[in-house]
Length: 197
Image (cartoon, rainbow, N blue to C red; front, side):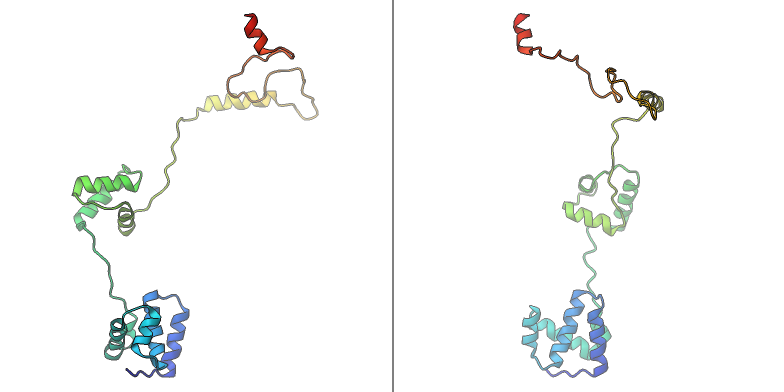
């Protein structure tokens, strides 16, 4: 099948190939360029790792509907298993904040709508319907202002003032942490103490 492209169209194809277009459209444009250079449909299909029928279909679209029709991808994807009413119900449930992960949404879909989604399918469904995930952080306790102020006051009272030396004999720690154990005198052996007792 012979094909001849004029210079203006070749420049337009070159510009499109340099821009960010889908890979499927890039393959179609490369097919046009290679067919214009004299390669056969089978050679072009082998270069693109496609069947010759796909290349022939693209060539037919180009000849019958024009160059702009070749750039349009008609693939819309699967509409999914949920009806629009079910999607709205799912969105309403998500707004309540009861789900903390996609696995919980997956379980909800199976229990409520008897529709089995994989975990990755659930993630894609949530993205498709406009739901976003934010990492949840949990706090095991709530800070009390009085205790915080008491700690700060105690810490500041134990800090040496500028130009003042801290007494090395004081055994009170500046920052209390954990449970304190009585210190063992120097040279005292724990094993001897347990035997003597």
